[in-house]
Structures are given as structure tokens and as C-alpha cells.
Image (cartoon, rainbow, N blue to C red):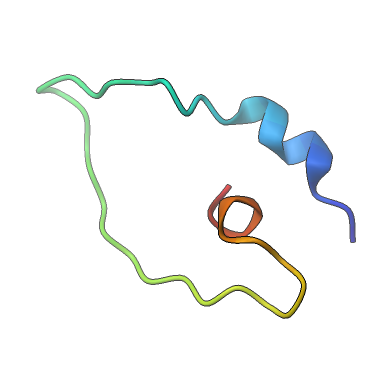
Amino acid sequence: MPAEWYLDFIDLAYNSSGKDLVALFRVEPAPRIGMREAVG
């Protein structure tokens, strides 16, 4: 399943503010899926 369209919603240059909720989670990408695509 192509996920390239979803990357359009990701802003890698975003800087969080003091009011943002920050969550910590673990990701294990499927074979042939890069970390950026899996996290996005």
C-alpha cells in the first residue's frame, strides 16, 4: 500500500510549543518500509 500521499501531512520542520501534547511511542517498520514512512 503506497503511503507517499500521507507524507504531505507531515511537517518535519515543526517546532512544538509549551502547550502541545507530546507522546512517546515505539515503531517497528514492516520490511521495505522506511522509518519516516512508518512514523508518518
